[in-house]
Amino acid sequence: MSDLFWLTDEQIAKLTPFFPKSHGKPRVDDKRVLSGIIFINRNGLRWRDAPATYGPYKTLYSRWKRWSEKGIFARMMVGLAAECGEEKTVMIDATYLKAHRTATSMAAKKGGRGRLIGRTKGGMNTKLHAICDSLGRPLNLFVTAGQVSDYVGARALLSSLPNVDWLLGDRGYDADWFREALQDKGIRACIPGRKQRKIPVKYDKRRYKRRSRIEIMFGRLKDWRRVATRYDRCPKVFLSAIALAATVIYWL
Image (cartoon, rainbow, N blue to C red):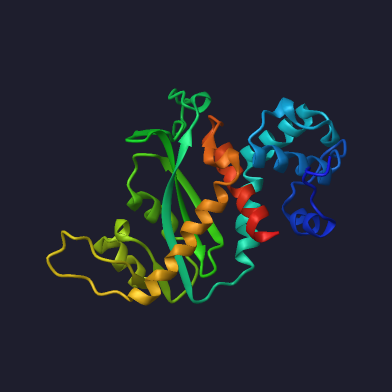
């Protein structure tokens, strides 16, 4: 089929350093299996609907599940993103991702953080928080329940910020503690002040317009059906789907 997705040898070479070591019996062809995993995630298919060209669907699902739980796909994205060496500007923002009914079981595993799905005005959602570089390429991702404040995502992503000059964000990130934390890291904040502030906050309006690039990034990630709609109950597996999409779109 001409519309199937296949990784190139060059792309596989970039990903190979992040693969876990094979113990015992050698793994099935990485190029074929990973291409099948990407095809399923991009099109939002059930695993049993995978084209026979990619091999048994159980092999695809087993590899996907095992590597997701180990955080392999997330490490791929973060590792490749770290090589870009952004030195000037990063952006922060968050977006809602609709949770399908198959993912909305609110039961939590013992000792776990739950499903990270919350009820908002738009229904059951998961919120994706992201940091991207000056070109709108994702550097780090974090997921929370849909009703969680943007401040939670900002606090979680703060330590992973690269050594840059500027951070762009919308009014949702206008907090004194966040501005002070950025100042301590030597980063200047380009964030509009909330309307409730008695003293208006000055910011570079021309520079702020570049923040549209992170909105475009979210839109491109949502072109992948398994990202736009959350089918996976496990938040770690869902984050892997987002990281895999970001890796293929921006870093391969």
